[in-house]
Image 1 (cartoon, rainbow, N blue to C red):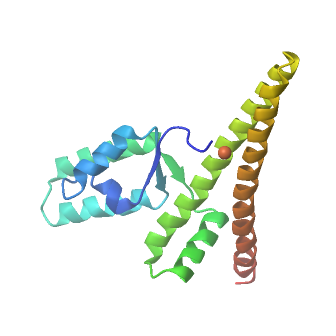
Image 2: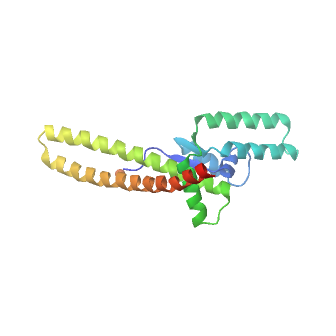
Image 3: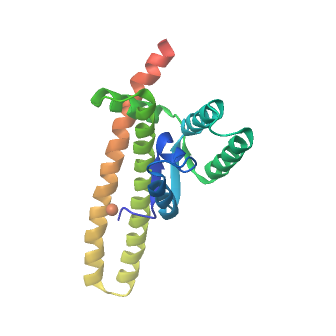
Length: 186
Ligand SMILES: [Fe+2]
């Protein structure tokens, strides 16, 4: 099992379309409607505020509209899952930069998304494992050994899923160590 609700992770330029009507706004609004949780990197707030300030400087919105947009954004962000710039996020960001041609800010969005996604997947697998363990106990108590065997087989698969996720998290944690060291030395 992998999916528990729909969690949508937006980068700043995509999420800004929620407030500024332009190409892609309809799609972003539809995604927001479907999402049970909206994920954003910590850099999304300053980036979107920066976009609002530019609109105000260029006279495309007035002071009242600026304040309305800012209030809307702050209210939306209150419910969003904000991904901080943790050492794991920075490590994943650097890995993305090394493997792809990206701007630093875009890589931070991707790094945040990967780390959050793994955390969510881990929680979903742990939930599935707990549910199968409980069901196995019930089947055993009812002497329904055929069902118990099927459930044990599925549980084995779920153990494999969570191992895969923990392997990726370990890889990211290992990348983090050199960053920590370079920060300590520098
Ligand atoms: Fe699974």
